[in-house]
Length: 130
Image (cartoon, rainbow, N blue to C red; front, side, top):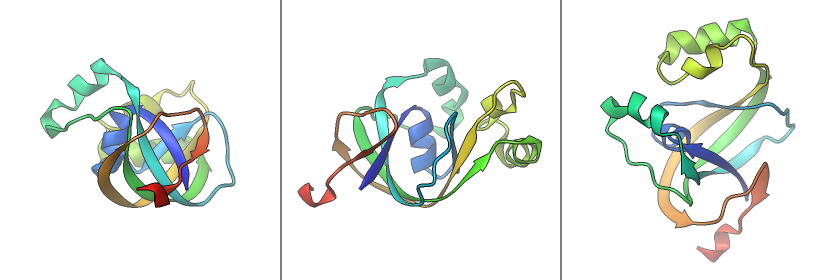
């Protein structure tokens, strides 16, 4: 199954249902099931922003399964939509100088963490081993 490694706290925000788009500078045609891997690095400043959510941030493990349903260009309309949805979560995307793509994530299911070493881009993990 395809996996995407995401820095914390963003991986947990996806697993908990607060964040429905993951942002990348690259486009993809991939659609389908995707595992969310929480990378080993953590953005401590961002974690402080989300203190009120009272979340835990596991690292170096797969924490959720989602359906990636779309990959869209981040334009002004999407920036405004996400700002209105949750300005705290989507604060970084409001930077007009940043150009990239939003991976639309739906049907989020948290799973029992599975230790795994992350990689760049999409990578594969055999779920039959677990």
